[in-house]
Amino acid sequence: MKLIAGLGNPGAQYARTRHNLGFMALDVLAAELGVSFTRFQDEAQVVRTRFADSALLLVKPQTYMNNSGRAVAAIARRNGCDVGDILVIVDDKDLPLGKIRLRNGGSAGGHNGLKSITECLGTDAYPRLRMGIATDFMNQVDELSAFVLSRFQPEEMKFANEMAQQASCAALCWIEHGIETAMNRFN
Image 1: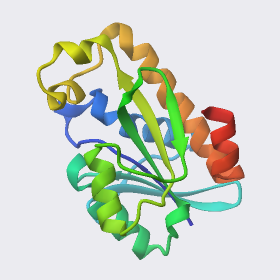
Image 2: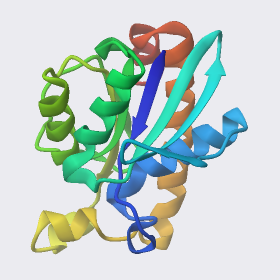
Image 3: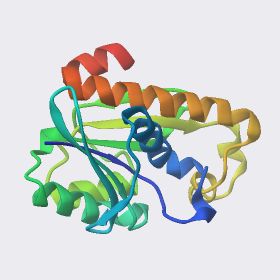
Image 4: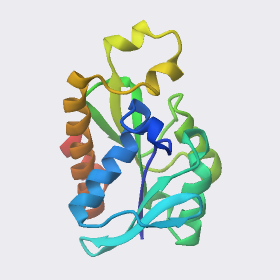
């Protein structure tokens, strides 16, 4: 069983914000697979499907970003997912807007959603796909939280939508061919 978790914050006030790129990517992926989020389990919106002969769970934690690990770890344990079969999709303030990067594990890099998942899983050895949000606007905001919770500017939405599409393609590649191939194709 593969699990793909896209991180974000629930509620209309956070829709289309930089911190919700993980949700945006999962919405694109769900549409690509012809499924929709209709089930709620373990503090998350969940959909179960199949792709490339793999059982697949798509997960959008509804715990707010800083507690994403509660939902991801509970669903992973309930469904017997190995850590290497969990892909987490998040925004990244250290990557430029429009760039994605896959890694097989590693530090949270200051991302509170990844910190929570690492703490709840007890390891940082899970694959992650980071989506860049860094722009010049980031330097004009006093606090990082104000930046990540801000909506994309109209001229930035093109890049956000393209990243969500790329992330969906990268996730499908990860399912079918593994993390190394996905990294080689999309990094």
